[in-house]
Image 1 (tube, rainbow, N blue to C red):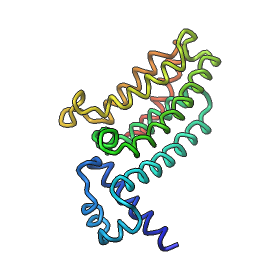
Image 2 (image 1 turned 90 degrees about the vertical axis):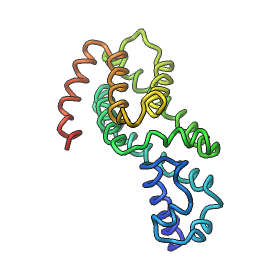
Image 3 (image 1 turned 180 degrees about the vertical axis):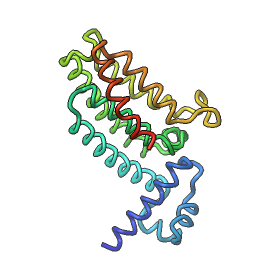
Length: 209
C-alpha cells in the first residue's frame, strides 16, 4: 500500500507541475524537488520521464472521463449537457498551461497515443449528444453529428496553440469559452439557443464564484 501511495503522490505532484508549466519545461529533478523526494525514488516507480508522462496522461484522462460521464448522467437533456460542459470547461482551463497538449504531442509519442484513444471516445460522446439534441428538436437536423464532433475536438486543440493564441495576449479559459459558445450556436435550433442561454445564465454565478 505504501508503494502505491508513493506512486500516486508522484503522479499527483507531476500533474500539478505539468498543468501549470507544461511538460517540456519540467524535469525529473523539478518533480523530485517539488515532492521533496529523491530522484532515485522517482525512478523506482517510473522508467523515465516518458513513462511518467504516459502514466500521468492515463490517470488524468480517467479522471476527466469520470467528470464528463457525471455531467452527462446529471443532465436533463442535450442542451443542459452542453451548458454543464461549458461551465466545467471554463473552470478546468483557468489554470491550464496552453503548452501542455503541444508538449505531449511533439515530445512524448507514447503519451500522445493515450490522448488519441481518449479523443476517439469523446467523439462518440459528442455524436451521441448531438444526435439526442436532434431528436429533442434543439439541434439542427441538417448537421452531421460525426463531422461536427471531429470539428469540436480540433477546436479544443486549436485553443491550446500558442502560435495562434499567444499566452501573453489570450487566456486559454476565455478562448475555450468563446470557441465553445460559437460551436454551440452553430449547431442548435432557435429553441436550443434559447434553452442554452437560459442554462448558461443560470450557471454564471457558479462560474464566477
